[in-house]
Image (cartoon, rainbow, N blue to C red; front, side, top):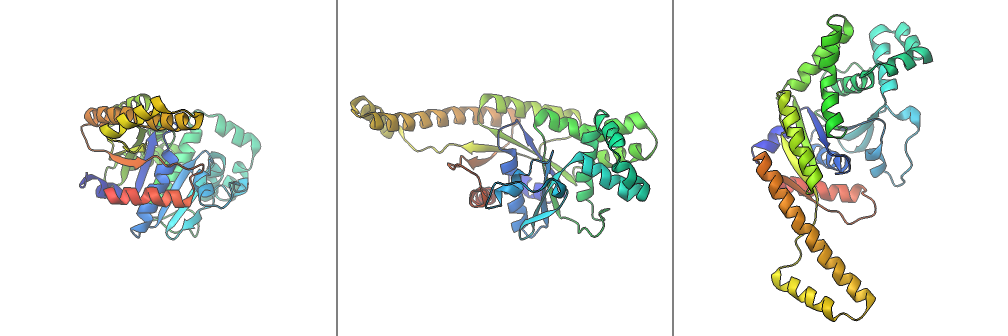
Length: 317
């Protein structure tokens, strides 16, 4: 793994995906913190205007106004975020490509509705903005380039689909600006020196299955995972003797509070045991080492918790 991860962080564009609910946004942000700590100007990109990353760094959970969605916001020294909205991405693309005419088209509700209704157009516009963020020569006026662009991609199935969208549009259009742009983006995604892929999983049966399926789906497109991160791992707190003591104590406990505490401890250990089994299955299925992040016992993941997770990632690098 020591050979693998530095190569990942050397890549300019990194997609982070996995089954829904496994903590992709959290891992993408923690990876962004690690990248920024290494002196790389880094941006964490969210799709579909989720704005989870920005909210995690704010003192309140209030989202940014809707008209700020395409702003590149600095969260910490060297670390930025952006939440991409396909409609605004289309307006920006038309404005850059065709000037006033494109701006007029982009602001047309009828044109916008037609464009957004085109199958795959939202995905193409979103991935096109991601591609633009990763270029040394930005088309956005006055925008500085990034050393690292980390994408909080959709869940595994949709995530693979959005990666295929540029190639699909290029094959359908064949000629013209959409075909050219599609081929350019598809070539960038296929460039293993430029683009990396990270899978996030929890040590449970369904996320493990989906991670293995994701590996196979990427392989079908001649792509491969650069790293797999097992998130929300429970700690191994008790040895055999301590477990025996806990079970004996549960048999003798006379108060509801005492019994509840002992059952909770035993339940956590049982969950940790299942996680170990599933993680071993994932490791065997992939044939590679895994990175681990601990379960964070907190009501809300804010900057202190994200910094802690970044610390753990750095330790394993």
